Amino acid sequence: MTINTGAPVVVGVDGSAAALDAVRVAAREAEYRQRPLRVVHAFVWPLTGAPLTPVPGAPVTAGLRNQADQYVAEAVDEARKVSPELRVTGVVVDGAPTPVLVDEAREAALMVLGHRGLGGFAGLLLGSVTVQVSARAQCPVLVVRGEPRADGPVVVGVDGSELSTEAIGFAFEEAARRDAPLVAVHAWLYPTPVGPGDILPLVYDLDVFGGEEERLLVESLAGFAERYPQVTVRHRLVRGSPGRVLVEESKEAQLVVVGAHGRGALGGLLLGSVSHAVLHHAHCPLVIVRRPRTS
Image (cartoon, rainbow, N blue to C red):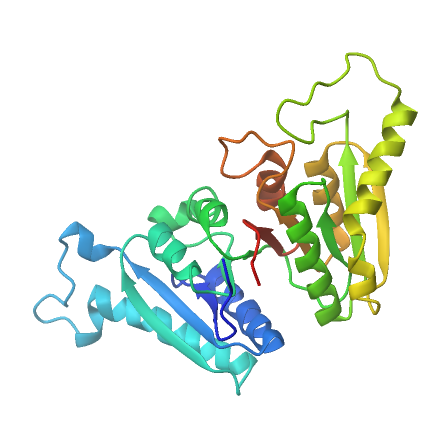
């Protein structure tokens, strides 16, 4: 996918406090990137056949459609408080949240979502909408978790896969943009296959494989340090569960970046176990990189 130079940062809203947190983060991200911000509310009620206008005798602002418009207007106002000069537009799109946001992601530079929302389907946002959009979006997805902070490093998970390389590139860009150090984390429990058909030994020397895992980490970062000389990089090679290690690292981070799934993930899963664990348990905002970018 080619990211258009004029592509917006898109933020999904549903009227919840978590969505307004996401709007504030999205406004800052759009400002950093010098891109417009597009606020989107997925309006699912037309699909149910429920009346959209106020009942007789009710205020004209009481209809469901008016409420949806108010969600968007409130979010647009909040974004402009964060960045008064930012180009912000808001839209109500008929449809269920996941397909609407996945479609929006086709033309977005970045999708920003809160980690939970209102009742009904939004009450399951982390378990449904956020997970599904993170797994299917054609642009990076930033999920606002924890308390956004301006200090702390950018942390990136490294596993040697193609998506990991994309995540590393994204993380270097973010570290440079934020003037933050980068912590590159490679965690492993046992040898893992690099490609289809790889046969792993039944018995192996931990020291030998530890050296190979260290080489994988170093080689995965090769070239990026030269491209971003202003970024201070620290390597973290840990023998442990990658998901747990990244969640622990997130306690002191301002952002965690992971690929949607890597070499250890089952091909049939939309999100690998590592990205799924970080999505559910990170202590800071995180970005999930779904697929390679062509520009």
